[in-house]
Structures are given as C-alpha cells and as structure tokens.
Length: 102
Image (cartoon, rainbow, N blue to C red; front, side):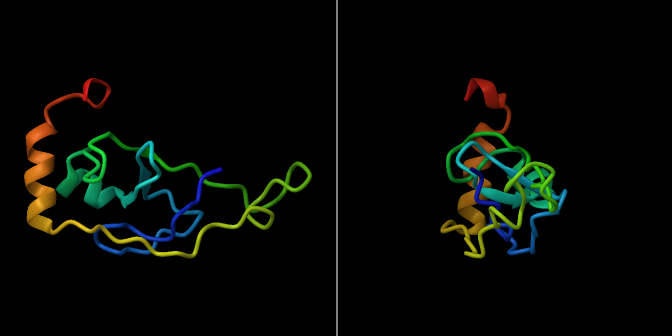
C-alpha cells in the first residue's frame, strides 16, 4: 500500500492525500509537479527512474474498510539528502534517456 507521503522531498511543499500535484517514482519518492517538471526533468534524484501522478486514496469507504480513514496517509516528512547542485548534475546526465530505458 502506498505511504502517501505528506510533502515534496525537494521543496517541502505540502502534498496532502487529496493532492493532484504529487508525483511518485517506483520507490514512492514523492515530489510536487513543479519540481518534477522544472528541476528534476522527470528524473528521480534518488533512483534515476521516472515519475507518475500519485493516485488519490478515497476519503470515503465505498467498500468495507477501504478509505483514507482506514489506511491513513503517512505523516513522516521526507527530505532529499542531496543538494540542489547534486540533483541538477545527476538529472542532467540521464534526463534525455526515456524512463523505460534507464
């Protein structure tokens, strides 16, 4: 089950569970669409993979025990361990390789 991390790992923007601005990689690294498009260039600075929109977990249980109330989002904020310069250098090297070919 997805953690639904509460923030962008780079700019620390709040990304609540209902946000449509959250992007994740295959390891659930979470960044806002602005950082993914403008800084990261669709390259996860942690794994080198690409991003997809993070799904929104239903707020209301339409099936028994399947909702945000039953499986709450994470409250643990995560921040990148890499500096902006390190991120820019890493992303610039592989940005022109399609995510499925990285």
